[in-house]
Each structure stands twice: as C-alpha cells, then as structure tokens.
Image (cartoon, rainbow, N blue to C red; front, side, top):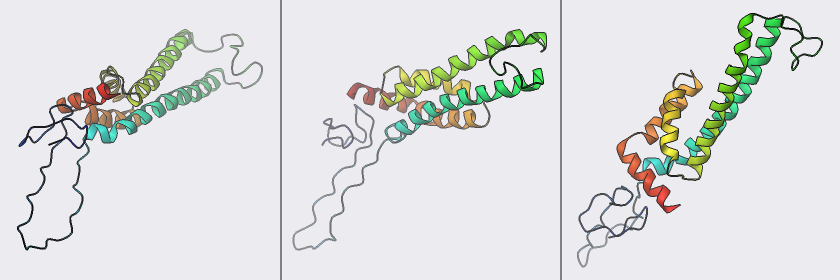
Length: 180
C-alpha cells in the first residue's frame, strides 16, 4: 500500500503513514463474480489538519503583522494629538517642544516593541508559507503571546495553537518541511 498524502510505502494493515501521519484507507475487497455493484466512487482521502490549514495560518500571521503596524501608527497619531492637543506646526513628526507628560520618554520603547513584534509576526507567517523547519515553534511562541491581544490576536492565537500545537501536528509539520 502507498500513502495517499505523501507517497510513502506503508505496510499492509497499517492505519497511519509512518512518514507524515496521514490516515491510510484500505482498498475494499473486489465483489464476487456475477454481482453488479454500484459504480465505484473515488476513495475519500482525508487531508491532515496541518496540511489543510498551514497556508491560511501563514497568511493570517502576515496580515496580523501588517495590522499591528497600522494600528500602532494610528494609535500613535491619536495619542500624540490628544496629548499635545494641537494639530498645527510640525505635527505629526516633530515634537514641537515637549508639551506632553514626562512619561512620554517611554514612547520610543513602545514603538520599538510594536515594530519588533509586528516584524516577528510577518516573519512567522513567511516561515510557515515557506515550510521552514523552525517556523512551527516560532509561530507557537508568538501565538501564546498573541493571546493577550484581544480580540484579533486572541482569535489568531487560538487558531494557530489548534493547528500547530498538538503532538501529531509536530510530526506532520516536520514531514511537510522535509518535503520542501
């Protein structure tokens, strides 16, 4: 027998492929002579979960990174307008003489963290789309961190963990990454 998902030879009686973990369906016994069966339908091949959802997860992580950059820029401009309470002069890129609170000195730290996390999200999506061997672990770590970014990050984190975190998903992802 041969695995329908990856083409690896599987011993008779095996239920799962030893290489990619896909479920193996045995061929039905031929009908007895003189018996006219219904027309044969093609066998249903169950596509494993990681293989079905990997591209979607990768695209969503790239989009999430872009969303984080855009939301950070919008938040920065709104925050600056509310804090400085003016739109004139050199707004939005010049500081115009520190009229804001003293804790505004931490703004570069927040901007740097946002840019780094957004870059990591895009990088994780890229690694999944290109089936990099280390992409699964990076994305799982970022998914746990994204759980705190309610509601979009939470939804993406749950979806990512559902697809990539189970142990059988590790074997399946490794098989996909090895083929690439």
